Length: 111
Length: 113
Image (cartoon, rainbow over all chains, first blue to last red; front, side, top):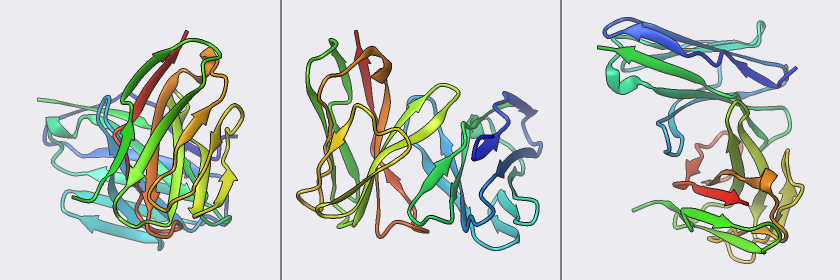
């Protein structure tokens, strides 16, 4: 079992819709959770981080964390074609400074 | 401007020819790391360094070396590159590691023939 799992996609949504990206992790002691966006050929850039159970909102983005289910998600409201990218879930496990990435979900937003 | 720089950005080399990819950050960050990214496998950590003269193996350290003689620099060394090291490499830094945001360099695309 991979430590951080994501559906590779591609996930396709129409412009203006809600895109839902999911991530599960195996280390129950994980403490910090991150979502990065990566455009093709570019470096990852941080979108959001979340540490506590529940929802965290930042503009059109909402991160949701459920530690009991070992599940973290990212919702993108009012999706735009510019949101088309690969989204990487990253988790810092019980061993500090050890960030593990999922393989990423490729999102396409169609005009 | 706060940034992480890597050089070279693109490199084509032959099996066995030693190479070094440089990484430098201007944010006075203590923690630096190297990742490789391959299709379907995501980012995998090669080595990390929590401070000067302190380095440790990540998930895929075989075939790589690193050094951290200065806080700002963290070069990645391939003593004898092989074709399975063809990949996209990213250097990253954070203030202290742990929960801090990682800043990534622009990436180095390496091809070993």
